[in-house]
Structure formats: structure tokens, C-alpha cells
Image (cartoon, rainbow, N blue to C red):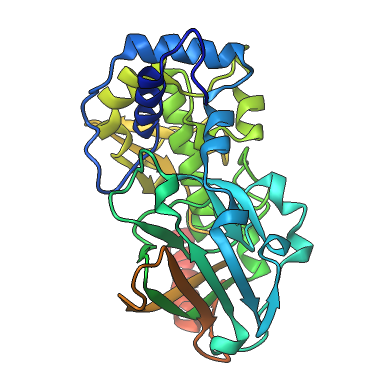
Length: 364
């Protein structure tokens, strides 16, 4: 954003620094508002007249994948990074994603998902990443590094406990073991509260037609933020979300909503998953919903009947190179096979006999 006759360079820089309040961060302290909100709103009005909102501005300020990803090797074959990386929204803002189909707009490409077909470094993904720290005027994180998240491709990208920092000048290798969960067709005849899971065509989510319990949780959390602050953070402002709430104006959180977001941050961070329907009120049979108990919100999002769990093992070597702004990432499967766990309706003969005797006794 270039300053114009309505904004000075100092005001523009302060506006850019204030954008960090609209993004969750790990090692920054933004629990209090230390910026001039009045000035921020004035500049926000200026950029809106220029055709920008917070979402569009964040996209243009994001690190371009073409600049960040310098070299990509997939299954021992070097390929253009742009052929399988795309820019997507995550809870940390716009990021570069590989094999990502977490929301409906990307699931139309699901038939183009890439499969390793093997194990070991040569059967996985290798990426040379240039952090370019000099391009960050007001970085969210204080350490020059990239954040890496490895999760199910059908899950909304939430960067949290399962993400890793890869500092500049280092190499990180992540080997992955796989547990596959499959729900048998017999489960569909049981009530969801009995089987304690939802199939891919259940859940009634807005962001995706393929159910995932962590996507359900993030959608539920976005609904709660909208309920309290009448807006959704730009990283939750997915097309399906905006169509759903339809309030006229663009419902993306901006500086006018910052006081509400900061004041309620501890409440939003206290949203929890539950598989107990009694802990959550809900709109219809499957919709994710919340209920407040002592400032704790519970989202009724059952585990997925069909799921993939990745067990990650990281090995990082720091200070690999001196005077560099780049780092290396290797991701690959650790074994040629994984563990398959089948969820099914299983009744033993003694359980069946006990129920039969009980019913006969009650009939007498």
C-alpha cells in the first residue's frame, strides 16, 4: 500500500503493523490494543475506497508462493512448485498448501490428489523454502522461520499443536506413519449418538461436503465469533461462510471490530469439542452448534467414521548453512504399510444371550 495525500508514510506503516492484531500468533503479545484505532479506521476507509477489504489486503501482503518455494522435488523428480502448491486460507492467514482439499472450493480438484506410492525420502516431497525475512516489515512471529503443518488433506488447515517451526539455515525431515480408520456400512443403521461418529456425507457443514470433525470445529468457532462480534476473521471468511450469513455488508472482521475480538479472545480460545449431545444445543440433526457453560463453548462435532491419522516424527538440523535465508523440508512416509482400524457393529454371543434373557424375563 502506497501512502497518498490522505495518509502519511508513518500512518501507513502503523496501519500495516496493526494488521497483526487480526491474525493469531504464537509468540507475540497483542492482548492489549497499542495502536490508534481512530487512525486505523481512517486509513481503512481510504483503502476501501481503493477497492480493498481486509481479506484482499491480506492476500496481497502474503508471501507469494512463487517467491517462497524455490525448488520442489516430488518422488525424486524435480517439478515446478506451482504445479502442486496453491495459496489457501489457514488460521495463520494465507499459506502455500500441497495436496489440500479442506474446503468445498478445492474439493473439485480432489481427483487430482497426488499419492506417494512408496516410502522413504526418495518417495516423498522435498522443498527448498526461501523465507526472505527482509520482505517482512511487521512479522507476526519474531523468529525468521516457516511454519509447517502436516495433516489430513480434507481438514481445514488449523496451524496449532501439530505444526512445526523450521528456522532459516536448517533442514527438517518429517517421517510419517499412518493409521487409517474405516467405518463399516453397518454403522449407518445406528444413531449417531450410539456409534459416536459421522460419515463423510453427514455433518451438514457449510464449508465442505466431506465431513471432518476439525473442520466442523473451526466452522463452529467461526459461527461463535460471528454471533459475538457480528463478523468473521478473514481466514474464516470462506465463500460458503459469507453466502450463509448474508448480512448485506462484507462480514469480514476489521479494525472497527478489533475491540470485540480482543475483549473476547480468551472466550474464543475456550471453545472445546464435545461428542456429548447433552453439552450442546443444535439447530438440526447434524449442524455444529455451541453452548456456553461457565464461559466455555462446546461444539458438537463427532469424530469422523472414516479418518486418517498421521503420526509424525521430526528430525531437525539447525545452522546447516550460514548467511542464508532459506531452509529445507523433507516429508515422506516412514513405512510401506500402515495400520487399518475398522469400526463396525460387533455383538458377541454372550451379549446377545444376555439381552435375550433380559427381554424374556421382562415379558414374564
